[in-house]
Image: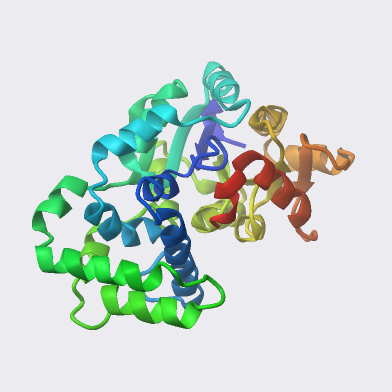
Length: 327
């Protein structure tokens, strides 16, 4: 149970709080960007499965940067999409309730930081409560020479018709050549752009916990995808409360408990129980709940249990639509 009545919760943004996917939507701003993003997302999966040294889940947000630059996507586009973004039902109400009860509410997200800051502001949080991926589109546009832009255009044309899963060998070969092999023309960009995912997200959470002088066992973390897996794993192993919300298998397998629902305010009774009695009190409440297939209130205590993949997949698709397929 958190000491001195300090209750700290860290949410991922896209999934638990917003159904939008900013990176995917940015790629959709130019013709063929939808298919191109799916190819690059598959490449991200392949590198993650391979365990490529220095690569983290979510580094897709670095891989798409050259294509964003080539097509003239700007910081203004990011902010415009932030203004248009929606929220998961109950998100604003949950944040408001947590703050009124004295919780320290933070957002640790893989998405680009300007986008994240605007969304947390719209949720009634201070922009300083958001931690995300730092991006300098204007700077990169200035330093990337024309010959590299031509190379990016050539690679895009080459891979845009490839099919994820079916053409994985070609996808990996073409993008390896652009980022890792050949003349390593864009390797420096991967070194500079470090998306907030995987181990980096866990490190950010540890740093946040340190600032409050709290161990991970006194923290609640909420995530939904592979970019949150290390954060959820770290909190769960430490004895904290790691919550998978409308999650895929990568998040579910590392979480303490899960909720599949169209409304995230369903979490409030559980978080209130945690604040008053800690993890064991939550476990007792969870194990006493009756399981019924529905669109709200699908809770599961995951310790030693079969993962509730079907209900999460169904509601994930219902809430996030096309973005639900992106990992």
